[in-house]
Image (tube, rainbow, N blue to C red; front, side, top):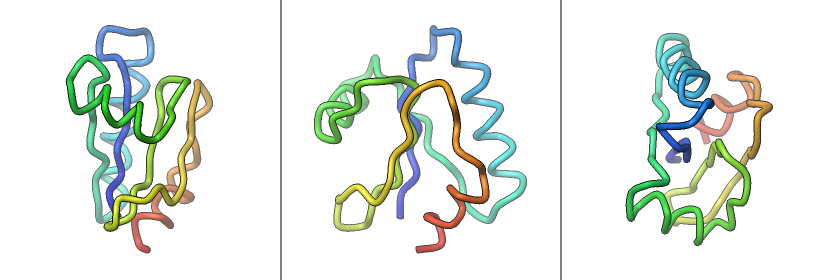
Length: 87
């Protein structure tokens, strides 16, 4: 399972997202990848997974399918995200 945050590094959400990723890494045995929407990869991921609100946290299966996603200002509980990381 791959966990990715799609976000705009130059936005107001930057600090919140980066603090979330830092805390998640400290408390769980896995990490969340930060992907800028200003990159080709980030823009393509947003298009493929139909992301329309940012920041967006994606739990992507090894096959490329989307297991779960969260979009917008309200970030999910870290334990909920960790559950997908263990799948």
